Image (tube, rainbow, N blue to C red; front, side):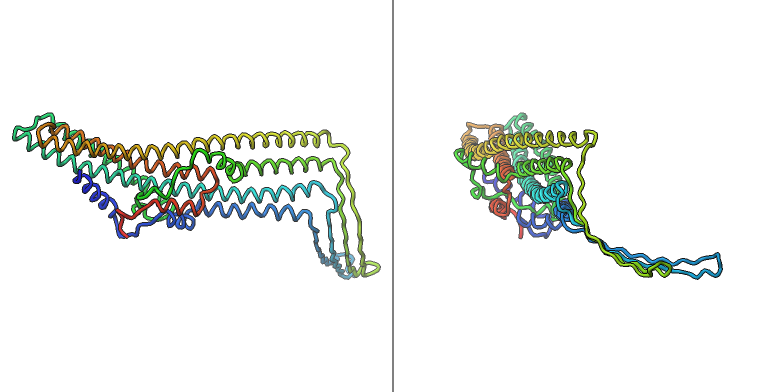
Length: 438
């Protein structure tokens, strides 16, 4: 068994020795992703664009000021004695809405859409963070599984050599040699699968962060992330009702639909606007030559009949508002169910990890007993091979259970809308440098 552990450490060292790059953790990966990932940059630019909708809506309620100028020169062909003439003028105009429900609704809707953009950007940011964490952990898992496979291959190569010698000496059967060879061939095939899997996730880490995916760390300590007790489910579920991004977006969708209803009701209301203007015109052919003037007025308009269009648009907006409210309720129920599933996966993952650790200890004890039985003639080389296979399978199963448990924490935090820097730091604390070079 000591040989297997030694082989695993050597294999882990060789797997993680691809270059001179410095190993990096999740915090470094996330910092790099924010500066490197074009999807994150696109989400930022989209956020800036959506935020302007609030300013656009507010502009409709503010005074609209304009100035215009004109210069004209006339040259007459006939009669010849007619001299050329010129005219110039400028004007200044101001329009201020006094009462306009539609423009107020547009301002309200612009503010809601700006807030939705903030939530959408935060959701995109957390989804990118979750993708970085998942890719990182999957690359770490693939590294560990490949190291375990290489350790198993080393052990099986030794088994084949021992079985071959024992068969030549007549102390082992051909069956034992064939079994050892089959185990070695299986490990060789598994090595190819693990290398392909590792390369796939290393490339994904590089795509997301721009860092060398071969330099991820291995999971060393899971005590930094404890499962949440079942008794705390309602507390976490209530927090998710407030902070979950999907729920917040659905709530803003309801608010936006209400502002749309207000806008459609405004189609039936009067519009009142103030206007003021000043003009100055100079015309050498006119009388008098210079004209100045100013005006101030109030414009009132009231829709009377629109062929039923306004009523239809109002009914449409009311139906859309009701649909948005139902979608909000559906989203809340869905998130609560997802929270329950995520909590069960987290707690079940912790229990599975503990069970895999016990299985590893049992497999180790069985392997040690088999080795002792082989020395006293109570066990065969075939029994030893099977015990080593069981131990290595338990070792690989423990690696899988550790990473599934970490991923369950990521999924739970994402549902909570709380995949923040502190959560990232706690995940990072679960990564060690035991098989990495600085």
